[in-house]
Image (cartoon, rainbow, N blue to C red; front, side, top):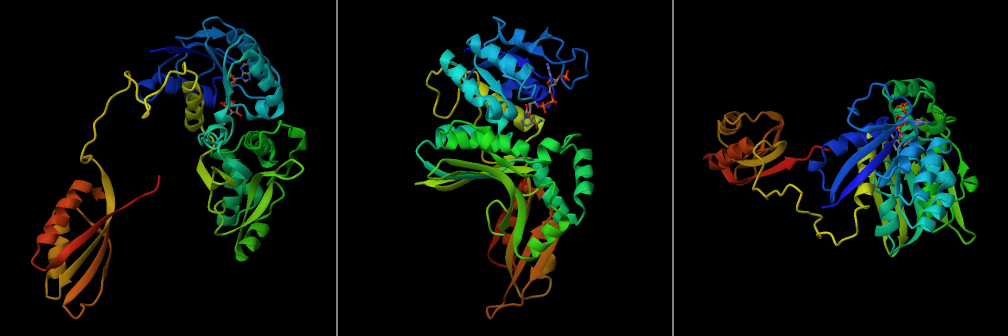
Length: 427
Ligand SMILES: NC(=O)c1ccc[n+]([C@@H]2O[C@H](COP(=O)([O-])OP(=O)(O)OC[C@H]3O[C@@H](n4cnc5c(N)ncnc54)[C@H](OP(=O)(O)O)[C@@H]3O)[C@@H](O)[C@H]2O)c1
């Protein structure tokens, strides 16, 4: 089993998220082992949520990038220029693959960095740079190579989507909701990059470049943000059946690729209209595919670090992988009939004979297994004397519910087999 040795530059949200994932890699499904051999950030002494005491420290990210012990350089510092760019260039020139989450760097210098990576025949990977934990880069680059893509739209800035969602939901003004987003950590202390649309534009440009095999030219991307949107706009649009959201768009035209970020009004039944809060989404339309939409957390230490790790896992030597992605060092699990601790709410439908005490026996059978009723509907008996009862239970043990349902089925007042269906709770 091969080990990939990482040099990690940047120990903020994403960098610490990655260190945490490395520490619990036994639970992951990487093709081999990952080891951190060196780290770099601005301050060595800053308090961090992970212990970095065991790693070699580098004051300078570029020195880490070319250290002979480093197989893969991971850039998580941010910034389109300066140390991040210099360190990435240094790693590529030293023939080392680079994994980065830095959308500003890729949007502004992706073309030149690609040339450098190709000249050196090394990988430059940036799944985490677009839509955080949502796997869009590799889906576009690899999985959809058999599709002629016509249009890629998306909601790629969680802060903007949170702002428009909350302004409409609460009727509160832009500044007020922005304050709250900053308090909750959804928005940066300086939110300009987000609310101006620039951050979404970086990501849109990267996606358009991949989707349409176009040289990335950020100067041609037109950018508008949500900073001019008023509650009034959102409310009036809502009354007309429209949701206003900050939408990114990459479009293939006869002349070339159009890439833009701007508020757009979407009919309620549009797939992007229902993506609320800080979620990100990308919709790819093409031939002969039709359309595919991917939605999920576009930011946050864990989701973003998981995308970084996904890139790292592609950098193990390209021996054929097991079709199910399993390797000898992975924990091997077995299928089981049921998980004893599983809990759920349930929909239970029973037909009861129309005689006194039938409903009471049903309630007792449920209560005896600690199943409590949240909602109950009873219809009048039909001509055969069967009275349908539908129950929504509170969340309970699946095992207890099944036992209760078996007891209900056995009641003398129950007609036919009860219908028991678990209620899925999202999230
Ligand atoms: N946060 C997210 O949810 C998210 C999602 C997608 C992509 N990204 C991208 O991931 C990257 C990192 O984001 P983040 O949120 O983790 O940022 P962050 O929390 O601000 O952390 C940045 C890290 O880089 C270090 N750093 C900054 N400038 C440096 C320099 N000149 N030399 C050496 N180290 C330097 C900082 O050092 P100190 O700790 O010592 O100050 C810090 O550890 C950015 O490119 C960002 O756009 C982030």
